[in-house]
Image (cartoon, rainbow, N blue to C red; front, side, top):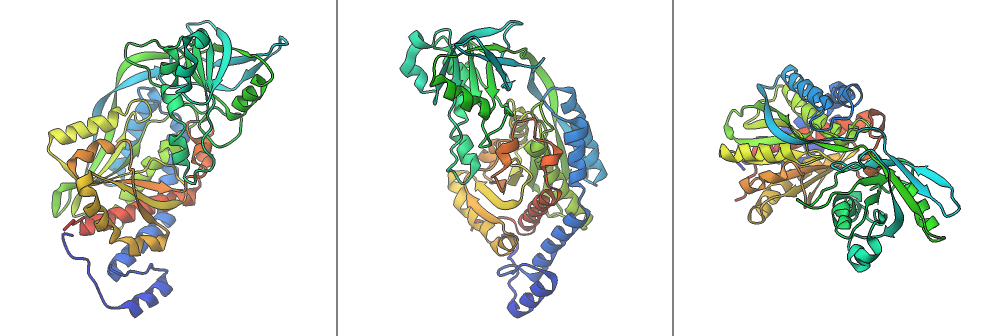
Length: 471
């Protein structure tokens, strides 16, 4: 580390201080660090404004799909907010985004052999094409994986509507792992099914919750390939269809007004505080400003944005002067193309910048559990070991460091050789709200949100104060 962590043989004194002031044990760090981290937590919990800022993003502005008027409002709001909290330099960074519009309400009906029909809750997936002002009808075929398409072949799938109905694995302790095991059918299902003559696809919502709320998300088509409509349906509807298919054939009719509008211009919002000792080494903290157009994008990723803003605000309000340059970045278009993260990394590489560490919050505003880390293979062990020297303080706040994964927006910075860090809150309820109409301010607990901001702010302080020396 740039300056050795002060090791003071005052264990008894620290234990007394811990008891009196609720300080963490500080084996390996000085009592000064323990006291300052406690100040960060106290200040954030007592005076933090992140919940108020989230209300503006989630409720007053609402769903912020890249290229929309709501996204533009969010850009302007966070730009002005960064200036009010005292960040030295605030600017917008232009990026080209793909614009997509949901249009009027989607309609999906299931038709039974007795002639009756039932409408089921559905949402067009992001980037999906519509049905050209008509309804597409076809026999329903249920599949549990996209690999099953090839086994059935065009002879069976021609002119059918495919339901991809693989649920998230409920046995996975970390729900993000369950999500990763099921998300391929949403992202690639339509493109793959089109190759075998399917007319449209329905996809089981990616949530462990059994309810009537469909969850949207991005789908991707092959360049030059046939594009067919793709819609998410609720888990309850998917379960009912599966049950009914065991009794006989079903047909479905699908109507969607979704359309792609081509390329548009939007912006990352960047705030920078120049370091006093190492201004050429950057510590980044951020989240993605865009969200899907339904709900309010409160957990995904309004929480991450206000985490980053509050983390910086708390340090400034406590009078902390960073040694490294600190950047707060609101990335645009993570949900539907990653344009903001890619553009930021491109500009940074062109300038020859070096990000010592980049911290992303994109896992919701729930109770903090710790941080996950990633880096180039030849850099990771040294950087991770350096970070674990902060464990005595972090563990006292129930924060743990784990290997593997960071964040989609900061991942393009990996070639620079710094440490990439993902904020990891409790994941059990995240996919109850993810990409759905229920992702609103009411789903976010104010105290949990502030605890997340304090955790991130504390990690920024520790990295800034000591660096990440790998030798």
